[in-house]
Length: 211
Image 1 (cartoon, rainbow, N blue to C red):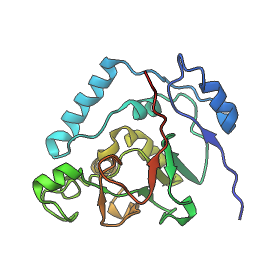
Image 2: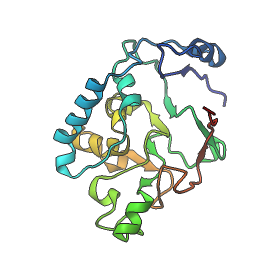
Image 3: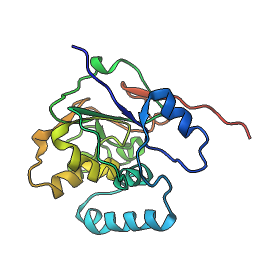
Image 4: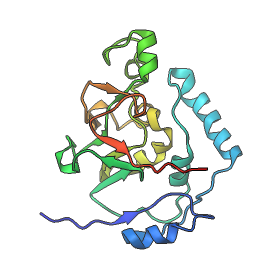
C-alpha cells in the first residue's frame, strides 16, 4: 500500500548557501527553529545532563547540537503515523523495508558499546554488568530512528541525549517501559563510529575536503 511522505530538514541554516537547495531537492518543510547553537547553550545542556542523568549512572551522551535544534522548533510538528529520523550523511546498506523495524514502537539500531571500552572492561555481551546497556540502557546515537506517532512528543524531548535518550525516557516518562522499545540488532552490540567498527545497517557518505 502506498504512503504519503513528507520531509523536513533540520540543520544549520545561517550562512549555509545549500539549505534552500536542499529544501527544493527534497520538497521539505522549511520549519522555524534555531539552527545555530552557542557555546553557552551547549554548556547548559551538558550541565543539565550531569545533574539529571550522569549522577545516576549515565555517561557520555554525545554532542547536543542536533537535538538542540529539535528543542527549538517553533512550528507544530507535522502529523504522521510514523516518523523516521535519519542523519543526512548516512548510506543504508539495505532498504528500510529489509531492516527489522517494529513500526508500533520506538526503534534504536543497537545496544551501544565503544569498542575500546569493551576491550578494556572485557565486555563481550550486553548483559555484562559493566556494559553501557546494563548500566543505563545505552543505545546507538542519532543515526536512524523509526518512531510510532504515540511516542513522538517524548522522543523529541529526549532526542538531544543521543546514546542516553532511551535511559532518559525510561527515567522521565511514567508511561514508557522497556516494552515500548525495539532494538533492531537485538543483543548484538556495536560502536557507532564506523571507523572503529563496521555495522550491518549503514556507512557514512562523506567527501574528503582538501585544504
